[in-house]
Length: 135
Image 1 (cartoon, rainbow, N blue to C red):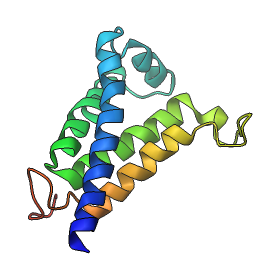
Image 2: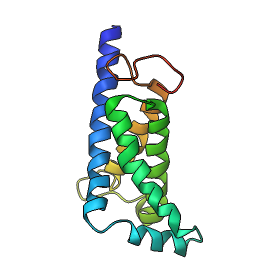
Image 3: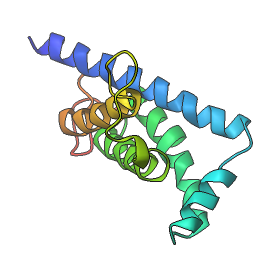
Image 4: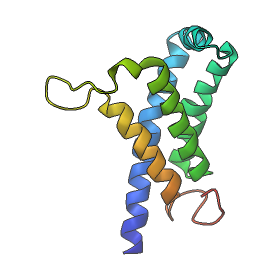
């Protein structure tokens, strides 16, 4: 049973890490976080905070994939997603798509997957192993 739990944690960690990392790479290749700076400034938040997107979409996903500081990385991705929902998707929170699903289901899966990882930890199949309070 333990092996099955650890395998599930591994699959969840790597899937979330890779999918969020692709968003971070896209930002690096596509011109950066200038548009995020503008959105933050319009909400009264210093524009420099936008650079934390790289922590939430590059550093934290790499930590998730490797299984290092996994719980902390999960919380960072979750906080990143909360900011994305607040800044970009607030107007669509209660919207249902043409196929009957929530229009923000990808963002929701990223958010709740990250929270699950933050509570579950890395599991055995990770660089950090099961030891330590952050794994």
